[in-house]
Each structure stands twice: as C-alpha cells, then as structure tokens.
Image 1: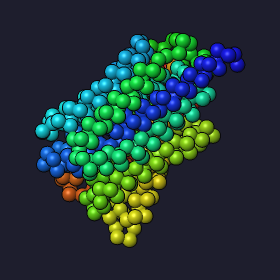
Image 2: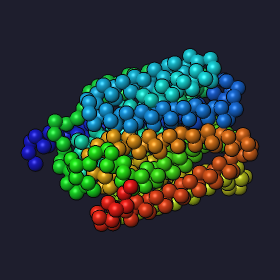
Image 3: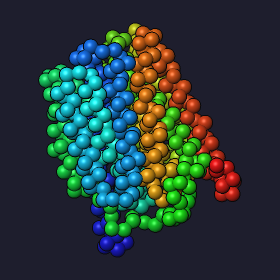
Image 4: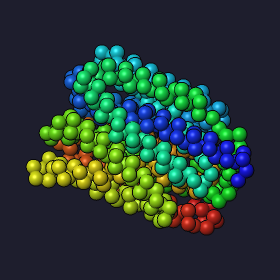
Length: 416
C-alpha cells in the first residue's frame, strides 16, 4: 500500500469515528429519547396518547422526508453544508420546542428537528463512509456507526430523563440543543467531506458503476422488494421503541425503571451490531436478517408478560436481550443488500428514496399504537400487530434473495 493510500485510509477511519460521535449524540438525544418525552408531554399539555404520539409521527415523517433530499444532495454537492445545516436545524427544533405553550407548536418544532436529523445522520453518513472505506471493510464501518447509535441510546435518554426530573423538560431540551451545537456542528464542519478519489473501485456489485440511473433502478423489482422489507421492519421496530416507556409505566413500572429498560435495549443493540455483523460475514446478509427478524418478532411478544407478577422482570429482560440485539439490524445490513442488488451508482439517492418510502409508512406506527391503546385501553393488540409486521418482512426478504440469485435475463424480464 502506498503512503497516499495509507493516508487516505487513516482519514477514512477518522471520518467513520467522527460521524459515529455525531450519530451517537444526535440520535441519542432525539429519536432514541422521544419515548422519554412522552410522559412529561402528556402531563404538560393534557392530551391523549394518540395526540402525543403525533410528536413522534411528525418527527419521523420530517426525518424521512429529508432523507432522499440528503442522499440526492450528497451525490451532487459538498457534504459539509448539507450536514452542518441539518445539525443546526435539529438544535433549533429543540430550542423552539422548549418554548412552546401548546402541543401544535411543539409538534411543529420537533418536525423541524426531525428534518435536521434526516439531513445530518444516517443517509449522508452511510454515503460518506461508502466513499471513504473500501467495500470489503464497509460492513465493519457501518457496524461502528450503528454501534455508536446504540451507545447514544444507552447514555442520552437516561441523561435526558435525569435532566427532566431535575430541571423540567423545557430546560432539558435546551441542554440537548446545546450539546448538539457544541459537539456535532464542529465535528461535521471538520469531517463532512468526500475523498479526492474513491477508496476503491466498485467491481463486484450488482450493476455497472456508471450505467444505472435512478429511473432504471426504480423500475427494478429488487429495489421495491428491498424497500418493502425495510418498511415492514422499520414500522414494527419504531412502533415498539416509542411505546416501550409509556407501556411499562402504564403497567406499574417507574419512569426510571422504564428508562433503564429503554437504555438496556440500546446496550443490547450495541452487542447485536457486532454479533450479527460477524454472523453476516459467515452466513450472508439475507440469512442473517431473516433470523434477526424472527428473533425480533419473538422478543416483542415477551413484553406481553411484563405485567405478570411472577414473570414480569424475566419477560422485560428477555425482551431487552432478544429484541434489543436485533433492533438496528435492518439499518446495518440493508445498505449492503442495496449495494449488492443495485450497485454504487446513485447509492445515496436510492438509499434516501428507500428510507423515505419506508419512513413515510413507519412514521404512523407510533400514532397507530396510540390509537389502539386509546381504543382498547391496553397494549396487547398493538404489540401483537408489531410482532406480525416484523414476521411479514420475511416474505419480501426471501423474494429479494431469489431475485438476486436469478440470472440477469430473468431479472430483466421481471422488471416492469
């Protein structure tokens, strides 16, 4: 390896580590902490579970709408203004939310924050890493990014919960905004840039590096199977994540115990990123994701026993271990599946479009859970529905495996 190649490699891993810090903080203080905000917002604005679930829906909807814009921009313009602007918007959203006196304004402010998170986290970070790190090491790089997200989910929701208890939710949101401004903005200003040349060539991917436009990709059956798989998994996972803390509180757990369970799932996710990353190297992304989806569905069902006097603690621990280790699995392995199926041409745009379509549907998962809770006065049916959605993801995932294994002529004939 030449001295130039060594220098580029070191810079690439610095980008990975720096972006990991950004994802750790941004997701830890926002997406992973929305469940922590549910209880104080219910009390502050005197609203129903369905109404307060609109906060998560607005955040997720705005975040997913921003993802294809982030991917398209990263493919075409410098990454720095896109990602720095996103971090500034995320902090501004929290600052505005801290001053709101009504639920409508609070939802609008969190939507602004969600758009900012979409512009500075998953899609642009994965796209940058795919340019800096050669394909044979991208699995490790993606795993580091998602392990950082899990670490943030362990640390920051607990800190935010303590800040809410000590100072109130308004001050807690202002403190969260200060952390984003003080840490993430400088890091992105320094690291958010493309390499002068790709880390390696793109041979070995599913389509020619320069021959596939977005239109051709959108006519591919493989892209839609990938998107359907991602949609079902994301819909189930986010609905369970947002419901976890209020559900545990509703059946008698304290807010601290519920927040600890939430943090425990993040710890399990960190372990799962490494465990399933190693399994995917041996068994492939599709098989690993199939096993993980089945485990996630089973883990969701464990929550149904959380209120039982004899089984409650064991059920929560089983949920944390089984569901938590598989929570980020789709985000970890789906970029690899997309690269293998569609190739690197317009990767950022396609990743953003797929996450948009999946996110548009999954953004309504928390609100659907809130509606069912208000209608049935229990979490039984929402949890059963989340487990069923996770299991249903096996169908498009299996069909995607068959499509990728089929000869090129068969694939061409199957495309509309």
